[in-house]
Length: 257
Image (cartoon, rainbow, N blue to C red; front, side):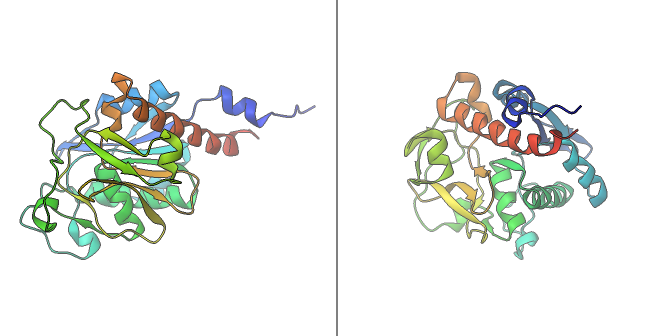
């Protein structure tokens, strides 16, 4: 006789598997910071780091193995993806990573899997959905900017962001303004149709975005994974919310096994 499985009970007991994208140390070596791994473990998830592959059917296999996706930071993005020529200030790019993450993000959004995208991840999320970005904010934005590439420890919060009221980020943190760390020279510009801005810096650079028709799609321009170790409350809450959202996908696929 089959016992009725309580959905909430499974959600409380089982840990979601979180796929983590990797960056290139060089052309033949992959890496990811243990800050990414530790933040997932601390929030209650099981991390699974993926290399960058481009065979679509193999990416399908990846997607079937995890409940939520963490798109990590790293180098610059190929501007031809949004129909621009390389800017003079464009840094090192890795086309295989761009292609892999673009396909991966689209497949996760098709299945409504939870996505947390960090720094470069926030940008490739927008590009994958049809948006565009600044290749170099310091030379492409005609105004006085904050220091977005801070000269300070990675766990240090260096500037404020202003969070849109009613946004998912606002609901998660319950804050309309707080300090974040900052390590980037690129940033999102025009948003894709299914994404919206949820936070900006005081110089109006986009600091956070989120999905408009998905359960949990959040991109942040800063590095919250570097701040969970210091118990920075907004960072801890963000990872906790991401893991909780990933659990919802876990129960959909595993309750009937």
